Length: 285
Image 1 (cartoon, rainbow, N blue to C red):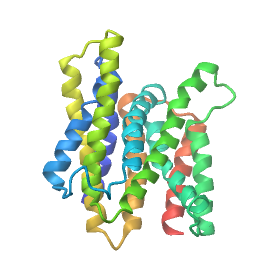
Image 2: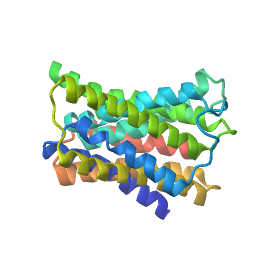
Image 3: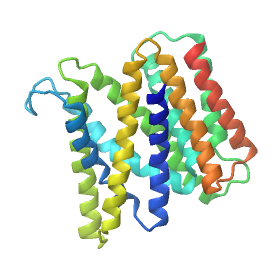
């Protein structure tokens, strides 16, 4: 369970780094770009992926391309969701995005699904509405800002589907696929940054690089410890699933409210409770 604990801490710390960097004047894109060189380097050094090179005909380039575009794009949405909606709501959106691949498995890949899983998904969707949805007092500006949290919910779900499809290619190791995806995402992110630097006249500050490296370390730590948790508890995947998702939701709520003074309405609090309940239903019923 220590691997799950460390993965939860790293995951929430990613949000904290994004929030603190923004307060110190670091633009979201300038921060996120440096996450990918760090992720690619650590994947190569720590996971030591084995592959036959980029010309290997078994490589699923279509999936890689989709992930390379989505990863930096949704990461930017995560940063804006944290800025506008707060850490608590953004973490809920990320964690409950697990319903997207579950629904895809049922509707697109014709997998059987138990009634309890459908019940858990239904509770989770209600949790999303209560956590990041709008109430009658919301104004137009508020609705526009909530878009980022919804983009995180759907985007992270699609990313999860693509990574699961990548994992099905047994001829290519998953670590090697991760390395290629991180390298491609790095190229996409630097293309975004190059546009902002050369066509928008923005300037790159050294502090953006330093904060970005810190972000990359914790983001990769989240991935590494999560993988190790599944390896250590291979016979109890539901424990990893439950511990990770509920852990991030609860720790994110403590950090968001306790450290950053985020305010939650009654509907938001009900949404948090429903989010935890939905994870428990899916894992154990």
